[in-house]
Image (cartoon, rainbow, N blue to C red; front, side, top):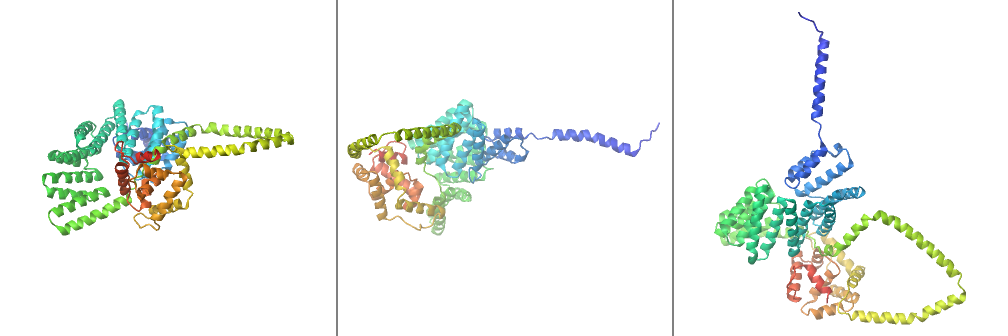
Length: 564
C-alpha cells in the first residue's frame, strides 16, 4: 500500500535528521586550548619547534582567563628563545612578572624570571641575565621545581664560561648534572656533561681523557633521548677533542655523525661542516677539507665564516695559489672585523658585585605592601615627636639656651681635632675599605673627564666600527688617574709601590675597572678591541701582578687592586 507524503514534510524530516549530526560535530570539534598549553609546555625541552608551532596556533582571544593568556605569552617567549628567534626586549615578561606577583604565583614567577634571563642573554645583556636567573633560582627552590633549577644552572654556567670564569661555570654545571639525575632528565644530564667535557678539554692535554669520558657518556645518553640537535653538538665536541688528540679517524667519524644529526637544522649543519673540514687536513685530504669549508662559509654566523675563510686561505698558501690565498685572506679579515664589531658580550663583574644587592631588592619587593603601611605611620610619629620637642624647647629660659650654646662650642674644637686625627690614621691603614671605593665611584662620575668618557662610549655604541669623534689622550689619562688618587688618598702611589712593573696605561685601565667600568666600555675609551683589553688585563694579572692561581677572571685583578 503506497502512502503519499508531501515534499515539504520530507524536507523538514531531512533537516531534523541533520541537526543532531551538526550538534555532535560541533561538540567533537571543540578545542581545549588550556590542554594545548599543557601539551606545548611538555614539548618545550624536547621539541621546541613543535611547541612553538602549537603555541602559535592558539589565539590569545580564545583563552578564557588572564592567567591562561599570561601563561601563553610566557611559553611563547621561551619557545622563541629555544628556537633562537631574536627578542626585542623583555617588556612582555615584565607584565607576566607583575601578574604573578599580584597573584602570589611563585611557580609562574620562577618561570618568568627564567625566561627573562633567556631574553637578556640573547640580547647580550649577560649581567641582567645573571640577576634574572638568580631570582628564578630563589623561587624555583621555594616551590621545589628541580627541573627548572637544572635549566637555570646550565644557563648560569654558560654565562660564567663565556666570560672566562671557567672554574665557576664548571661547578655550576656539576650542580645541573646532580639535579638532572634527581629528576631523571636525560637531556639536561647530557647537556651538563657536555659542558663539563668542554671545560676539561680547554684545560689542556692532561685533562683530555676526562673530557673524552664525559663527552662519550653524554653521547650515549643522547642516543636514548634521540634529540638530534643536542646529539649533533656533542658529536662536534667529540670531533674537536679527537682532532686535538690527533686521532684522525675518530675526528672524521664524529664530524660525519654531526652532519647526519643536523641535516634538518641549517645553522648547526654549517657548524658540523666546519668541524669536518677541520678533521680532513689531519689525514692530508685537502680537497675534502676545501669542499666542507666552502659549504660552511655559507652560514650566517660570522665566527664560522671567519674561520672557514682563514682555513681556505691556509690551504691556498700551501698550494702556492697566491691569488686565491689573498682573496680568501681578505674575506677572512673582513668577517673578522665584522665579528668584533657585532660582538656584544658584556662583562659581568658588576653583576657579581651586585648579586647580593639584587637579592635584597627582591625581598623588599616581596614586602612592599607592608612597607607602604609602615612609612606613613613612621612619618606621622616623627611629626608628633618634632612638634612636642619644639613645644618643650620654647618653654626653656634664655639662660638655659645660652648655656647649651656655650657647652656645644666648648666641645666643638676637640671634636674637630679628633676627626683630623682619624683621617690621618685612616690614610695610614694597610687597606682601603669598600666604602672608599664606592665613594670614589660616585664622586668621579660628576667630573668633566668622566662625562667625556661617557660621550665616547655612547658614540661608539651608536656608530659601531667608526672612528671616534673624541679621543682620550695621554694628558687626560694622567688627569683621570690623578683624580682617582685624590679621591682615594695615596692609592696610585701605593699601587705603583706594590706592583712596580705597571706602566701608565696599566694604571689607567685598572682605575677604569676600579670605578666600575665594564670591559666593552674600556675598549671604547682605549680605542681597542674588547679582546685586546682582556689580553692586556690577563697579562697584567699574570706577568705584572704575579697572580697565577684562581679562575683567570678580571674580577680577581680588581680584588687584588682593592687589597693593596
